[in-house]
Length: 376
Image 1 (cartoon, helix red, strand yellow):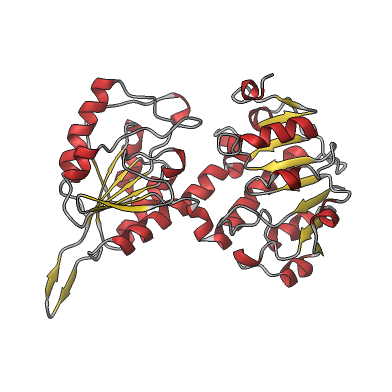
Image 2 (image 1 turned 120 degrees about the vertical axis):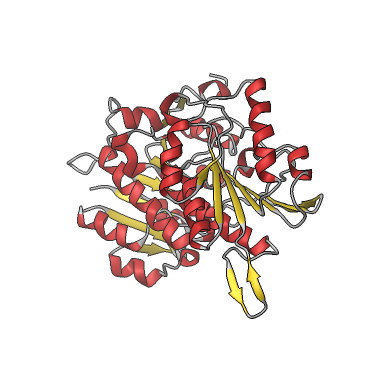
């Protein structure tokens, strides 16, 4: 039997919670104890009464929640003060985001906790149910279209009214991963005409299945694991020339391109922005890692040559109830590899999923992508 702790998220604007009441019911049914800080789920739409009904124990302060806990699960890392309260033998699970939270690595090293990073779970078939990047990207893609529709001076659907006929908006989605595909589907539901671009040729079938047209730049940069590789300078120029032509006719551009563990690729340059129609909108989902547009400012919305450029952050938190439910299901599936049949926290270190997301153990940062950043 494991005791699992959940604290209220501390990051500014973070409204999600790591476990929803329905997932608590399942874990308690497996004879685990759930301890939750009062109010942890309030902003996600889950009140304390819902957790109590699920069988969880609620406490007003952090110390009581962490007392005797075997596992601490979060969405985003808590502050250093809370990390310092963790016992050495606790295992922490959540999105670690070392690039955005460099102090976390130092805290894990000095505190000697075992940690597993949800965002580092290998994107392989058997781990799809644990893939937090995909589950949260689904919401980001949906929200991006709502933001674009709100910022645009045009309506998305074609409308025939007594005052005349309004043409449908033209939307371009750059990047046909999970977020991009959801953006395509949402824009189509709102009645827009949608084109999409992805440098992976394999994305064409998915794009077309959603009713969008694929933009062909003549560049194919399929990389390992289904991700895109970095383009050569010649390929970048070829891509820019074709995209600029299509963007000049677009009302909305939603950019979602990302390379895991690296800054977002710069796809939209100033010339492409200046070539767009006045009143057009760019929503850059890659803002958190630098943005796909050279003019993007993370967390801000600005105007350039009559084009509105938005760099929203933490879009999943805008739909916190469903985001939390999906996140909790990802956690539930991962816990099957973390808690053994006797209820002990004992991750199978030979399992490829655990090896892929194990960040630290007993004062050592073990993940190869981040070990060097701690001076090891």
